[in-house]
Amino acid sequence: QVQLVQSGAEVKKPGASVKVSCKASGYTFTGYYMHWVRQAPGQGLEWMGWINPNSGGTNYAQKFQGRVTMTRDTSISTAYMELSRLRSDDTAVYYCARDSPYSNYIDYWGQGTLVTVSS
Amino acid sequence: SYVLTQPPSVSVAPGQTARITCGGNNIGSKSVHWYQQKPGQAPVLVVYDDSDRPSGIPERFSGSNSGNTATLTISRVEAGDEADYYCQVWDSSSDGGVFGGGTKLTVL
Image (cartoon, each protein chain N blue to C red):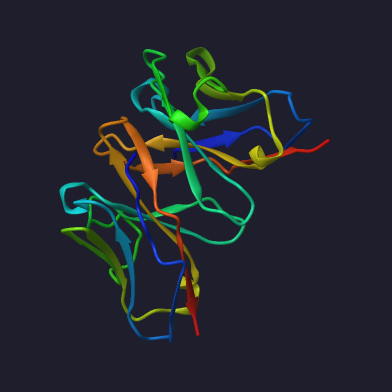
């Protein structure tokens, strides 16, 4: 069965960077785009961007351009999301999420990784 | 960028029908997807491509989309349906996803 297992919670200081991993199993990793979505405490879902695990191509939401980098390691079926120059309002749960092969919706989600930014 | 507007909250009694709207400019020309999120959990897809249901989702969940409004309808609402619901579309101009602000469904 499809599983997306993310790395554990992180606490970072303002100005630092964080890198969250997402290990995929149960399907061909390179066959499906991977999205990253975040959710601040008590707030809604916010799309951050996608990566094509086959080519490494990416597209980032304008809000995060210049601060976010999405990469992958196909040898271990793992996607990564790195966010730099962290601010307190980056405190959120970060999800990796697999794109459906048929249309642009998400069919599987990781369990989420809480990133707390605090001095 | 494309904007989706949802009501912050909807309340309904058990056994009644809940309708959650998602407004957007000419949203009827896009495919709309709906997710359910319960506290402390990742979202779950409940409707895709306006009105299709993934396997395992009860028939009580249905969707429609026309003009400037898409609607998620939950029939015979149960206590277990209490959750946040988000609509989502793909914005081809930015080649990115867009979520609505979410609607909290309360079962009275």
